[in-house]
Image (tube, rainbow, N blue to C red; front, top):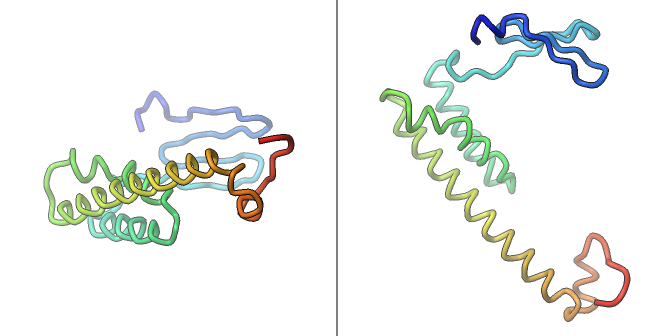
Length: 136
């Protein structure tokens, strides 16, 4: 963190956060929360974390794929080469592909459901979370 941000404080609602280096302190709760910094962890742990997020996305948690792509994009494609980088690159590419497919399938389903909901009658009502009032 640049020295100009050392001791930087943020007021959010009634909570006042003080940033000191890579630690966030909440003076009201006297707690310290570590901020994730990929530059501080060894390459083996980066690979392990990237793999966990990639595999976690298969548990119908595509948000993990998004996080994986955002967090590890620089590690995979920008940083100078290191031993674990080809595997991280593979996981990032596959996470991006999985996220794209998930978004495409979900968007298709939402479009089809919204278009044909009224025609499907009771079946659509059974699979709806909320049933709109009024005429279709």
